[in-house]
Image 1 (tube, each protein chain N blue to C red):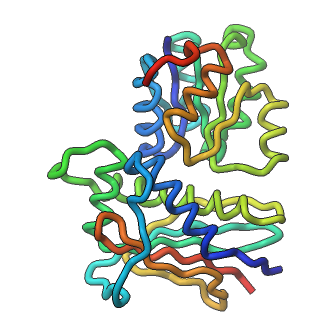
Image 2 (tube, rainbow over the protein chains, first blue to last red; image 1 turned 90 degrees about the vertical axis):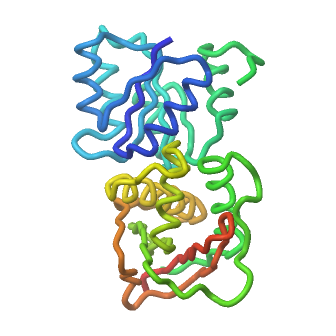
Length: 127
Length: 150
């Protein structure tokens, strides 16, 4: 399984990628939504994108909207990983096409639980 | 508009962040005991909360502690050097998550600014301190302050 981690914070990219690797993912990363789209155009779709909300150049919501408009990327699972915790924000992200929403801070177990729900990790698989 | 932000809620946020992001264990951050630390080479990270409720969350510590924190977050070795950019990013991200979680305590809507890091704590001129605590992370002091704009 391949995952792309999109966050303007290098620290958060490292943390999310580390968690995903413990769950068996190969990971790549991008600093903002536009860089992620450029990467996907070059490498093709991945199984999972974990994307932050607040980023320069192109934010997470714009990225989700752009992906959903691109037929070649429609099969990808998108999880927002962000500090934005207002209900209205969560609704906006899901309405735009994100499949799941994870609020920072999070544990590896929390990511695993979300990915189990999405069918990307087998239930009960040890970390 | 001002709202009450309980110190215990801010402490719970700090505990959660350090347990899940930094150490992977509960109880690594505890209240500081003893006299307040006298900073030698401090560094402060802060993030502004904007909207119906405006304020600032800030975190101050010794630069050496911020280096240790960056190493822990980035998975660096104990003696591995930390570039200034990594320190700014890692320390800023901690306060960013603090700010986001403080925002979730509010009944109002708003947004979060970008985290900033400097060697001098800018405070918040005219601001009201709502919560102020000194915490110990592996025996190293960190001061966490939440201020409201009046």
